[in-house]
Image (cartoon, rainbow, N blue to C red):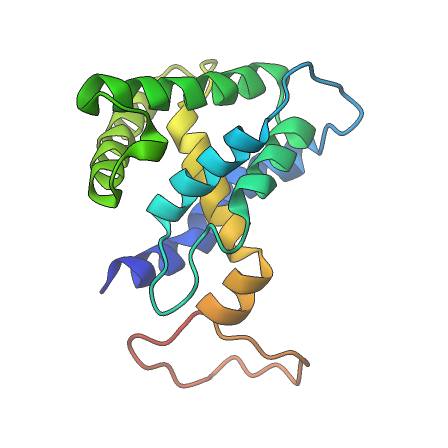
Length: 186
């Protein structure tokens, strides 16, 4: 099983239960205003983070799906203020980790260096999630990763190119043949 296939397999499960569950239980908070805003540089940064998580392969990656813009909309419109602050601070923290390890910001790193940093952060957030108290907020990298998966697999590119897509629905057939390596249905 390659990385892209593994991500496809868990994206619906993880994205639907974690991000979707929170979204549907709390609802979108479009009426709340926030003083935190994202700059064009922040969006470009988030696109690079997302593209490191889901790079171009035989299908376009997360940057092509404009996942950075999606993240900003979700954070501003649907996250509580405390989570928004954690997410914004996370951008700076990720840059600080890059500068500490390689002496330059995340945007100037090579793809291999970016991957190394994000793999370490992923392990850090997994450890944090295991040991956190219920009242504690999620780790900033977990938010970034969840929004990357949700944004990509709900985008036009994610639905039509990364998964199998039939533009016009037909009758439901719950017993379709499946061959290992087939794309998931959109």
